[in-house]
Length: 281
Image (cartoon, rainbow, N blue to C red):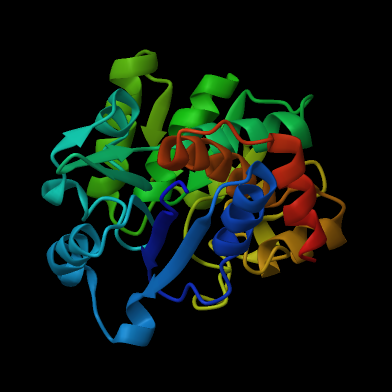
């Protein structure tokens, strides 16, 4: 009988995560014994400084891999032995494969966001877009935005140096001026075709919005990376104004599709995983 696939998710406030059910149901459909555990730093009363111990424990307990979420996507990198080209370019990891004594970091977030956006809003105007958040998810989403064809991406973060680091990396990969740091939030949003929330704001554990509701207007599209809850305060407010929106569900599903393949070596059925995610309400 094949060895079960044992996976964990490390992050804060992750009790509502749909990842365990999403991965384990696809495993069952594929005939793979698949076990997925939550390693919730909030419940354990730990911070990102516990990552070295948690990675060592996962290896000793026979884990095949770990998903990594807020606030550990960048903090985990010093403790890994290898990075995929995507993870190296983005400076953020959401998937760690533990194999043959190695800890290999990957980033499936950018693919997840791009695929979810393509399906949710294939005809969106992409001349000027404002993104809030330049952390681990933000770096991946910004990469996805430029891959999708955004002409000018303005990045706004509570830490301007972090925003500058992401913008500089993007400009090196995609061309000078494609990504800039936003210094005037109101003016940037006023000139934008759409906005992306890549901050934790809107999560059950981090309620709120990344910008005032007064800056929203009906001709803006709004894309979200948060998926628990699926309807964040930002999306609810935007929809009430008549904005077109994309929730974080697509990113959640399609990053999981690629992570499942990396963990198990089995190609999952993306449409089946999408239907299962939708069935969770």
